[in-house]
Image 1 (cartoon, rainbow, N blue to C red):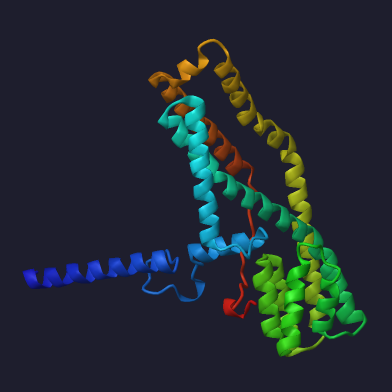
Image 2 (tube, one colour; image 1 turned 180 degrees about the vertical axis):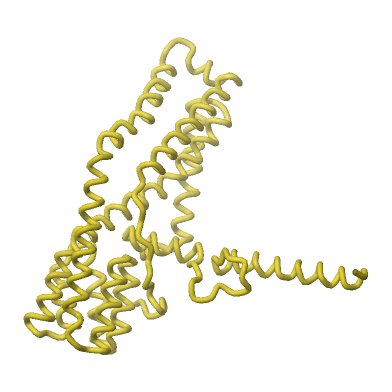
Length: 305
């Protein structure tokens, strides 16, 4: 192979590598093909936005969320330096404090998703009765059911109703509901209702019955798994409480504060905090129940009011 051909080959390989890096960072594409195609993964920004919506923080901008993390990080670092008198512990506590908004958002997200999982079988059954037994149109039935939804879900149904009154376009209305809930079950329900509205026929009863059965089985399976984990979740709290209590007691005994401020004490504190974080993360991973992926995401986020 000549030097010119080798140089051309290296240039093509380098250009393709740059293309893969660009699509990975900007579009969230992790494949080796030239284009992601129809199965493109959502970008990190889209996944974070979905999680904020699921946590009920859809009105919070990413910059505001980041600012809260930075503020708590500085506060945690200051407290760590005041307690232990050294930078290693201060940096570790700053990182721990920065994780507080993330952990709070995750807890809110889990709670809201659990409320939605509990509510969807009942809402779907009411929707099926409204459409099949009472003969109401799909938009009328959807908004009537939304008025009896849990408080966390009701604003999304109200936003969808306003979009329907404004445009009388069911697809736009369902896109708003999808985007406001960011819930896999809501995606499946919206897609089922849209197909039934566009095609018509009596198949909507069977599809809703199948969806109800699937949601009930999923809910029961998660409840059984969580009941089996209850004792382990309670025991996991001691991973934080016992070492933290011992550290506070050590500060108040004799020359405890001076011992913590010594270089060896700083290293010991840093290692202990790292072990605490590692054990907690490991236990969380082992106890985590899988989340359902969003198969039918909103087609156009710009339609969301």
